[in-house]
Image (cartoon, rainbow over the protein chains, first blue to last red):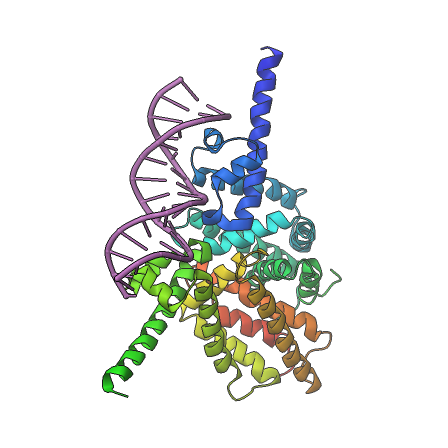
Length: 199
Length: 199
DNA sequence: CCTACCGATCGGTAGG
DNA sequence: CCTACCGATCGGTAGG
């Protein structure tokens, strides 16, 4: 293996990462249908058939972007395997982190709405994403209840559904208000009101 | 004025209404960018220049759809001028009604996300819509507090922000779950937990 | 309201 | 990775 070969592979990987970054921004700005492979390619300094060398179709590019984000954020979310109230706090911390990453908030806000159509290429992805988000959050609330820190009358299932819905709705408001909405603050107050201990 | 002339005007108004209905469905299915004037026109049995006779541009059609919905639903929401807890109940009733009108839920879910981009034709409309939604809901919470039925520690401003965000997030979940999410039920439980009286 | 057209842009492919 | 092209579709206009 020569230096040139290694540099060639590294260059390919770097270009792939650059495409994923620019595609994420573009899908967030314009949605899947509104995004243009030519514009994404231009921003990466290549032609659009050049982009299709790395990702054979527009749909494969979209799915690669979503999988890449899930891998990165999923790892961050579960680092140290937090449970119960700690896991709920981690969700609030994610909202605080996202307030520094408008592109990522746009991506999920716009695509989750677009993907409610049954024929959207990311429809199955988002159906599954919501199912597991609500499910894992319900587990956290159940763990909190078992430790006796959940207020009387709070149902883990309903609380999980509420928290996920609240996170999504706040993202829309945050984007429309130009970053004026305090996503993490509202979420923290919401969860605090459900607990018998300081959050 | 002859019978023919009166029929002609009535026919024009009826066609205009039909266009607004089909455009609402199409903007909900595909978003603004994804919607096609030719497809909307076909569904109304006319050509797309025929459609442009009633609405001179695609943007004017979108704004007409949004204004039409605001006029109809705004009237329903404020009928009898409900205040305080009654007004909050009216919002929950609207969610229950919307569970019977998937097209309207799609329209606002998809367009509000799309319109977070500053250059979207409905951007200003949705910025203003959220501002007034949160404001009028804050007034309702303040009225509830003045009547002594709001739980200690609930801030009208934060509660209003939460309720509007929750309504939006639940709509996304409802669409993705194929109508399985009980929007009105979750909202009712949320508001009930903020009050000292039965909701 | 129609037919016929404009220039622009799209995702993807051919061939190198 | 490139240039050059394909067929399809877009919003809007001309002219009637």
